[in-house]
Length: 247
Ligand code: SAH
Image 1: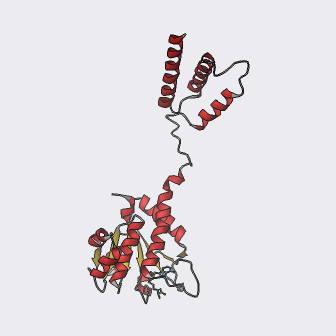
Image 2: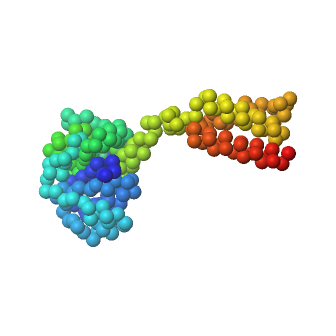
Image 3: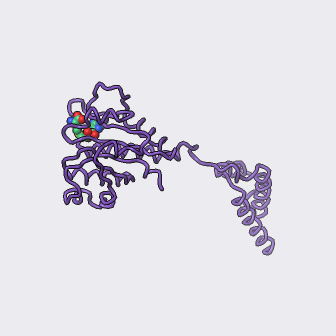
């Protein structure tokens, strides 16, 4: 099972089936596939299928629940989305830190739910009270209510970016130090390279033109592994053999 399977999008009391289809599409675009529906007005539905355009697999797998409690029973962390700030005790996050925390939870093998409310009324206070945190997508304060599927799109995109970034928690260029050639092996390679380049008259020891320091810099940048160094040594040997045969 993939980590993205641990992130569940939960739609509560959705009244327009088209929004369910558009949500499935938004999710699939961002690589998420676990959709849960709490008491939808109409589902399955042709409108949902039409708006899913190619994400029908997500609709087919979607699980329908009678209550929000049932839908989130197996989740360890629950996020409620809300267009308005409501004076409730739960902490209010922006999407980025929320997505980071979702990643932490799934990395520990646990389920996360992000819940979305009814098109007109949003999540009820009771639904919001079941969430660990609330998240609001920052936008025009005079027009802050996004279409349901558009809100799912923004939230899943933010999660997509956070989930993609896992490799960035490693150094930018991942180096497997265990496989790296030792400095001793690199020095003996540089000797071999210098001798070979001299033998074929590429390098004139009297006029070295900083060729060797530049080649050293090039090879150090490449973080050469032992197996790669063996290939380079093999190439030098072949050049030497060929050159000696011809002279
Ligand atoms: N009038 C409702 C908005 C309903 S929009 C309200 O004030 O809450 C339907 C759903 O889309 C919301 O319940 C929420 O889940 C999501 N949504 C819409 N705009 C959002 C925003 N700016 N931030 C976070 N979620 C949003």
